[in-house]
Image 1 (cartoon, rainbow, N blue to C red):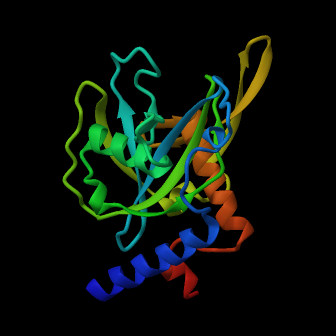
Image 2 (cartoon, rainbow, N blue to C red):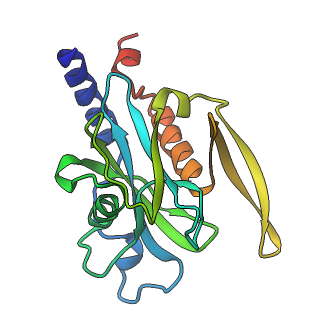
Length: 211
């Protein structure tokens, strides 16, 4: 079993590094006069490296003013003290779910995702240990759960919906996993990751790669 987990870890690391861009400052902050909108932000896409890789997701506290009860990746807006988007994602992940930054193997980033609420979010790909003992910030996070990557990346797992915003219509992805509704920016970033893997014909599971 240990050998299989090590093989899965090496496979995940290779595949995700192949599709990811290097970590750096948020692209909006690389100009002399950064715009005030959209707001630079970053999230960690935490992939637990088990025999079958899984993605960690959080359920936001129902009493929060912003997106209460919604499912998200740990993350938030970029602070002036953050050296790069990985620093933002790791800081927020530590605050929200208690994952030590030293326990995360950061592998790179995906293109920024523009949300309907005016944030430019850079997804930071990172491997985390399986069966980690999370410490939740109970005023922000009600619970966490894992979703197998095999399920998330299956064609047909998600559906496209639309909603009205500022007089127009905006499309979003929606994924149901049991009682959990994953939608909006979180689902969009998951679909984006899946499409990156699909374009490169890269299976995220080492077992699938051997077939």
